[in-house]
Image (tube, rainbow, N blue to C red; front, side, top):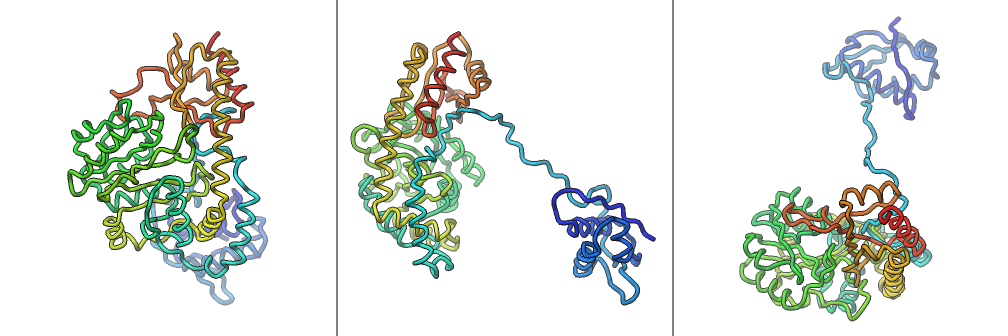
Length: 468
């Protein structure tokens, strides 16, 4: 009787493991066409499995054409195209789990997102139930490719109230975060001519543009933001900027530089500015800086924003506002893409905005983050670390810069912090061009997820390991 050296492993159902084993043996040529296999009872006894398990595996193999069941005779191997490369392989490849190679940190100054404890869970849950009961049919239908009309209308009202932007809901496109929308923009604008990026800046955007075949042009900054003279020299056709609160330096682009950028865009027929307004809601002093899109009279600014900072990154809801000429091109060339945000989340967010919950939530969290910013500065002072550290760029947003003056090198300071369970992010890692890198020991400190107690503990630890 043919012996099958099958050894179960893993958490998959046994019948599935046995089916995969016999199939791979047939494909590797270890089972010859016409060869008779043990009966269900014989194989069950041999492998110490239940008859039902063996029957399940055999039935699937018969259905897929690997075996033939003959009345009162048994199961026979059918001819299969042999794949020699499988001869030395196991039926189920042993794929190692994805490793991020990162240690666990007690304190992490990442700039992504804010404090999860501030999310309005009870309000969101109540609105979710309302959407389920009132939108039952709409939730099962495909959403409009640009997003459900109710959400686009709510976004338009929000933009006018918070940013002074006057647009039509027809110009708004909702998508699964800025990364997806940036990919869509490269397809819309084309990958020729070069895409200019602030240097330092958000490195993931550079990788997205490059992955879509675009040439990336790093442009240095001065005290007013991206240098338009260097933008001209680069030959780029599209520029991505964060003018209201540069990431990560925190620079606010003045009106004179914004006008220069608009003039640059107007000098050629296919130049565009992508305005990433990623954290405009969180300005702690004075009125919000007007959006560049509001100054545009020639249809050259594409406005981009998400709800990652104001609500939660995991919602994966972003949006962009296209100038009318680009909207026509989008509808002609890219409207075939389905909406990438579930209707359920879109309707819930629309209700959340329409009833004023987003406005109140932003007001509460702005006060909370402003207090946290002050707590960070106070913790540095109390710990004595302010003698060797200076801070900048924290007048808005959820991060600031900390520059350290120390006889120790930046790698050594970063290593000491990591060994103490503190993850820091050197400003050097945000530069695209090696020659432009920061000459000082500067860190980008995202404090949105830190409690005031955490900040006290962090700076006490840092003062202990850096001052002594």
